[in-house]
Image (cartoon, rainbow, N blue to C red):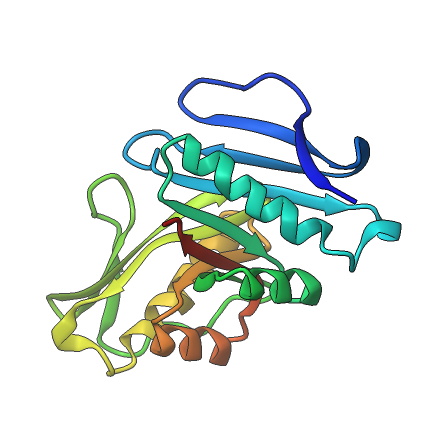
Length: 224
């Protein structure tokens, strides 16, 4: 039997280009897939937005062939990198991306916000004065870190966070995230989301220690 992709509709063009495909076996639809490319400067990166195979057709290599075919389509669109996000509980999907050569690029973590976090340690304050919004974390008069929040539905997302190189490893990161949780809770959010690069073990350990759990793992592959 031959597994192929068949366009499920016209290209959607604009700042981003995307298209849906039917996964077919000898012309019979057994699933679906959607891909997109981002706007410049990210137009050379393609993303598999969704992938589904009917339960009766799983474990027969349909998804593997579909992903490899999607890579060829994205390559023809000028992409040299492809991305996919997978829930950590999706074991079959995780095995698939590993089998076809993807590497972890980062992860999204979340925490349910129930009660206000502790106050900042003595000597630390926060100044809401960064350009385009956000907050500086001060130790006395010295800015040692910063963060910025963005609404994400009923949640808040920590879109920018950092501790200056000279002040890392001193507990400022913990204080900063705790303050961000309080700001999110005060704004009416019940969840705080943050992203951690795959190679930032320290940030992952800190987030885990503060009660965050992984909800998505980002995967990346270079298209040769």
